Length: 103
Image (tube, rainbow, N blue to C red):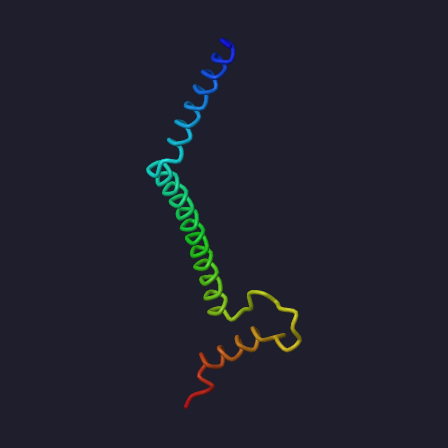
């Protein structure tokens, strides 16, 4: 009988300890803190990703502008109808600069 009371007391003690720990972890204030930290971290990583994409876009736009100003093609596409477009544009631009198309 005494052994049963001892184990009952141990079980009740463990149960109370578990309930207290779980209730602290599931308290609304604790959950709100965890949620705000995870949302804040996700928002920061999305913000960093978008900043990297914008930086890449600006670099690529600068490359395209420079190539367009020089009249050269950036990438040589494997399209039969697009062959020589950069050269034709460069020749046309040179004719415009020389004034062959005066109005």
